[in-house]
View 1: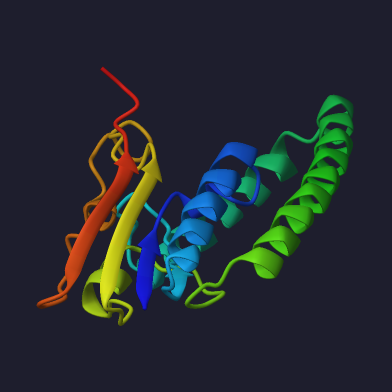
View 2: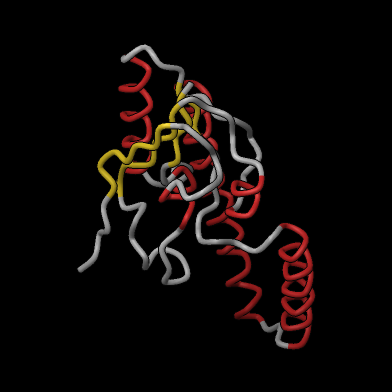
Length: 168
C-alpha cells in the first residue's frame, strides 16, 4: 500500500489541487499499488484539545462583538455572508463527491502534525507531493514536517514526487 501526503486540504475548493491529487493517485494506482490519501491538516496545527478551547474563545468573542456592534449595515453584511457561505458549501459538496468517487482516503477525519507523528498510517511506501507542499509561506511561515515525511516509520520507502517551494 502507498500512503500519500499532498495538499488534500485544498481539494474542497481548488480545482488545481484536486486535479493534481487525482493525477498522482491515479498514476500510483495504474502502477499496481493501492494508494490512500491522508486527510492532513498542514501547518503544524495545535493538538485537538487545545484547538477546541481556542475555538470556544473565538466563538464567544465573536458573539460578544456582534451583540455590541450590531447595526443595519452589519445585518446586511451578515445576510450576504450567509448566502455566500451557502453557495460555497454547494461547491464544496461537489468537490467532496468527486473525491469520494475517484479517490481513497485513510479516514474522513482530518489529522494534524501531532496526530500524524504519534500514529502514522501504516503503509509500505510513503509519497509526498506534488504541488507546493514545501512552500513555507502557506502555513505559519514554516516548513511543514508532515510534507517532508518526517514522522516515525521505520524501514519504509519515502518518496517525494514533484514537490515545489513555489517561492524565491
